Each structure stands twice: as structure tokens, then as C-alpha cells.
Image (cartoon, rainbow, N blue to C red; front, side, top):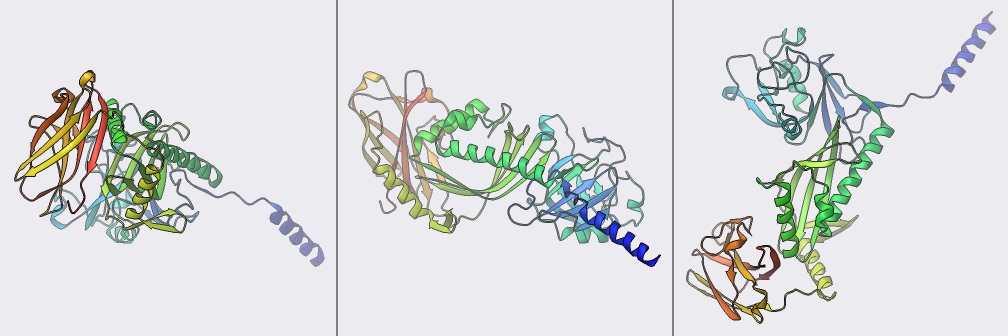
Length: 447
């Protein structure tokens, strides 16, 4: 009898050992699973009234808490509907003390969320004041659906959650019921989005304006510019710069239904300038055909070096000189050859430009734009002729260009005391008021 019992145990153990291991599943918003630096993702499930904290390097939550959400079920649609939104959001500010309203129990502090995000706006959802906050009342989370739309937890729990939250970086994914997916599917979805991002970057660097713009949604706007205006703006910049290089790092990707949020650090280098910023993009659509609906950036401290290739760090100045040397050795030429800057004269607050034109048969007009640096605060300012409006150094009305005469045309502009001329750009405009040529001249730092 004893032998039979042991044999049965051995048989059962063998069967259990042979069962295939169950594949791990994680919330489907976590497309950065085992990708990039370790970070935390806050996940809220309204149906169970749970808040889970995940590391992007672990299958299971590292922490979990009880919460309560909006009094009405469903996705938030409008102001005052007592519903909690669903989607991907970021923590923007911390409110404490007198910053918190006194007409309700907000506990010791609150984290504000960026609701409505660009996807909500596109889909006509509105409202405001959606926060993750605490509560002094110990029984606040005992009742489900007990808030006006915020996600609410006990004060002591909020203290514990706070250690996982970094403003503008940590996402909160809010579901009605969490959708889980396999690691294999998560990785495949992420790789498709990475490829979209790589192609977008490649077209930008190659100055392939049509390919670049094809990654943007028809509803995209930038500084009140329509997509068509944005395309013209970018095309003009492409003509102004001899080269463009874009380096992306610290990439994170999140997905929700049919949209994605991609964040990364972006170093932009051209022959004229460079910028370093944290960028957030909202891509609308599935992995294979997602388009950029919105993008925003926040300036970061300028680096002295960057990683050109794995383990190969170079200074920005060295990289720029290298790129310009390659261009110099590759028969790079400007046209038309008939227009040139003959001389620049700066006396007190006046700048005179002598623009030469060997052949006026083409009927070109010109708009000069001067870039100054203020010695007092190192700020940059663009100036042009009187009556010409500029936006980001670009003329906004090409019809106001000055006709170029045969020989030399003298153009006079004004400057403020203490301003140093750093560069000047001649925008040549044809009879149809479209840019035909853009030539930028750079002024030596000691000149």
C-alpha cells in the first residue's frame, strides 16, 4: 500500500512536470516591457477598483492598492459627468496645502493628470480636474465608484505610491478591465512602432519632405499651422540647412486601443544650430499605419557630447565639422548662381546689405532675415525689413519681398544696441510668391 501511494505521487509529479509553463501576460499598454531603462507604470482597473504598480522589467505587479473611481460607469466624455477617463496619461503637477480645494476631501496631496490628452481632444472628449489624490476619510475606498471622476486612495497608500511617480515621465494607464497580452505579442507590437519611428527619423534626416509628412495625421497642427503649412515650413528649413542629424535616446512606448504614446530624448543637429529636448508624440492608428497626431517637446540641458554609435561619443562641434567637411568634399553647390551677398555694413543701429544680381531676367524678389544674439542674456532674435512678420525666423508674407535689380540692391535693416549679428539668410522668391532659393551666411564669432 505504501509503495502504491508513493508510485502514484511520483506519477502525478511527472505529469505536472511535463505540463507546459503558462506564458506570462502583462497589461497591453506596457510596450516598453524589458526595453530601455527601468521605469514604473501605474495601472488602474475600474471594474475591480484596483491600482497596480508595474516595473517594465517584471511580469507581476511590484505593488497594489485599493482605490475608488467615478460614481458613474463608462469612459469620461464631458465636464461634470462623474466618470473616470480611460487611456494613457502622465502625472503633471503635485498639489498640496492651499493648492487643494476645500470643498471636498482631497487628503494631503494630489497628482494632476494631463486629461484630456490629444487623443481625447480628437475624439471630442472634454473635462478637467482629473487627479490621483488621497483622502483623510478611512472609509473613502470602502465604497466602489465613490468619486467625481478622480482616482482616490487612502493617504497612507498615496504616500507609498508617490515613490514610484516621476512627473512628466511616469504614465498611468486607466482601464475599465485590464487587457493582458503575451510578451511575444507585446514585443512584436513594439518592434512595429520602433520601425515607424526609425522611418520617420530617416526621412527627416534625408530631407525627404513627402516621406516625412506622410507620417503625420491630417489633423496634425503645429503652432497653429495646418499640416500643409507645416510641410511648407519644414521644406523651407530643409533648404536652409546643409545637413540634419537626429539622435533619439531613452525611448518609451505605450499603447491603448488604437493609439500609442512615444516619448524620447531628441538631439537635433544641423550646420546652423542644435537642440536637445524631451519629446512626447501621440500616434493614432494601429502599429503598422500609426500616424503622428500630436507632438510636444520640453527643452533639456544641452549636452557637450552624444553617442554617435554604440560606445562612440563625440562632441557636437566635432560632429558638425565632420559633416561640413564631407559636404565640402562632395561638390555641394548652391543655385541660382546669379544672386550673391556682396557686402554687409553695420554702423550703430543700422545694417546695410548689398545684394548682387548678375541677371534680373528671372524677376526674383528677396527677403533678408538677420539672426542676432543679445550679449546681455544670450537670447536669440530674428529681424527683417519693416512690415515683414516672422515666425521662428521664417517670413510669413512672401508678397512683401523686395525686387532684385540688375547689379546691386541695397537693403537697410535696424538692430538694437548690444546685439551681435550671428547669421543672415536671403529668401529668394519667384513670381508665384514661392521660395526658390534660401542662402544662409554665418558670421564668425570674432567678426
